Image 1 (cartoon, rainbow over the protein chains, first blue to last red):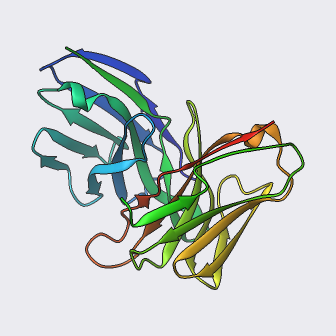
Image 2: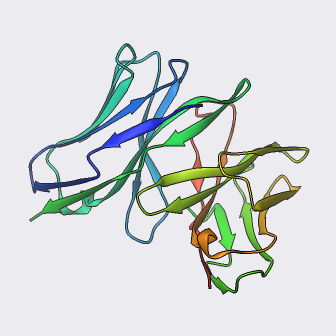
Length: 115
Length: 115
């Protein structure tokens, strides 16, 4: 099955700086890569996603890049703000059992934006 | 997102007890999921269901069972709870078709403690 590794596990940046979180995946057939933000005590919420036929996607201050050859994808947050502080999870939709596909999540990155 | 609800939100139970966690959704989605979240391990899939008659095991199904009572309801049971099942449990739904077939919407979570 799919295996997703996420780095770093913790990341501290100064307000206004950029933050980058990286994930690698193992299943070359994975076709969908979402990023979720989870604030303390809250549910995970989708912030951006990308499909395997796209190399980059941007939504205001956040962007995701995908390198299918290297099997890695990254989340980029520019001009960070204190409200960006949260745990971020990457995921990959790969083969799970037989022909079924499911999301496999990374272990999470605790992002802290320092004022 | 009030469209996916979970009950109870918090539960403390003793080893050996049977416990049921319930999930309801008003999004009209066919696909429903149960995940477990542990610190440093991300979200791991327990069971998933693509419709009322379709139930599938996830990555960590041992010690758990599920019931899909209706399109909108998906319950998770621990037949005989043990302390290492102490975790945060999330229900999620997805459409499976349309413009965002893979996007998963999470419930608020149930914090379960087994003593």
